[in-house]
Amino acid sequence: MERDNMVKSVGRALDIITLVSAKKGGLGVTEIAKHIDINKSSVYRILATLAQYGYIEQDTDTGRYKLGYKFLDISSKLLESIDLRSEARPYLLELERDTNEVIHLVVWDQGEVVYIEKLEGNETLRMHSKVGKRAPMHCTSVGKAILAHLPINVVLEIIERKGLPMHTDKTITDKDVFLQELIKVKQKGYALDLEENEYGITCIAVPIFDHLGKVVASISISGPTMRMTDERLDELKVKMLAAGKEISARLGYVNIE
Image 1 (cartoon, rainbow, N blue to C red):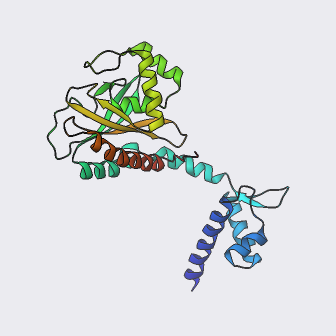
Image 2: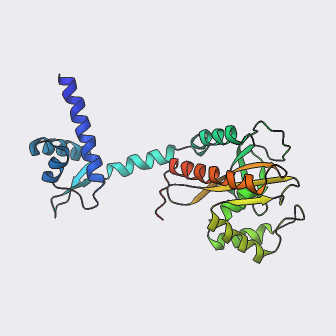
Image 3: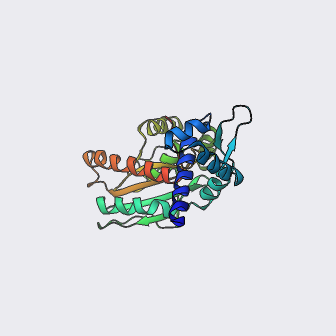
């Protein structure tokens, strides 16, 4: 029975934490007792214990209880421990199973994208990409998906330093046209590479955001242009947008729009 009571107390403590966290101005003892249907003396004891360990604190002006700063310490450690590649992999595997196409995960560094994961799919497709390899941002869907969400001064600095060199005759090489393209990408939520980097290859990509709301990576699906029709791209964009949101959420991103 003692063990059961201890488990029940832990459950009530967690209920109180959840309850208090949902109220910006905090809650009083009476309010907490009413919500979780236990007597006020029990609520006091639980709050006192939580306060002792820094998980709850009492506002000296209002007497209400709110979350303690211990949660900031814990959350920062959690965020530091999150590994992008491992968090994204289940979603990449699902995309690979659903589409049978090549799936990429990239990060950006020094004005370029770096491939950190590549799943080959079941279809035969020759591509220059491989894990660890770098690629330009302006002519890849993954690069454009990231650039569209970077500050304009950073984008202009990258263009100034890297230029917009032609990789195929479909590469966008005019700066004004390219900036307009990034605006469209941001509005739509996804980017396309219509044979802009490699002939015969079409790609669709979405950005990945971290807990601060900063774009840190992107994922893409690549396939032969003959297979990546407008109809197929419309189908794939739904899967991609969903996967991008899920991975971003795993990194702590909260979309407040």
